Image (cartoon, rainbow over all chains, first blue to last red; front, side):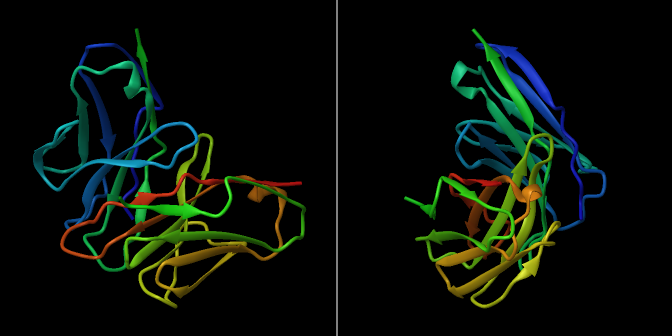
Length: 111
Length: 114
């Protein structure tokens, strides 16, 4: 199982770009990388997923280097509502999925 | 919209009791999961199921069992609750298909064992 490591916490000011990095040294060939966002008293919510290089959607970008041993979630121009815990998940391609969440990064946006 | 419903938001039980946590999804998903979430430890997988009547152990299955008699329902069972099982429990579901399908989570059950 691929294990993941993330910073415990980060602070940023409103309007800035925030980058959160996840290390997954033992990632397997077929593993995908998925990021989730969690607000207090709610379950995690899917943000973005990728396999290699770069993926972008309406809320974030995901950068994955060629060796795939790390990935970086990028949140452009954050606002106070982006204050949450962000989880990196590395999982098998399909079938009997063994899923390993990181411990999460608590992002605090400062006005 | 996707919906995963956990039967209770808060639950208080006593040591030694048999505890059932219920989860229902309305998306016809094949896969269902149970996690526990503790401060500093993130989400840890207890059990998952990829089909009716099928189950697989996750990282921390000790002290738990599961039941999946119908596709939409996945139950977590604490056979004899202990204080170290006080935690937030999260249920999730996902489809099976090409690539890694995102999981959809319920809002959790905060369980206290006294």
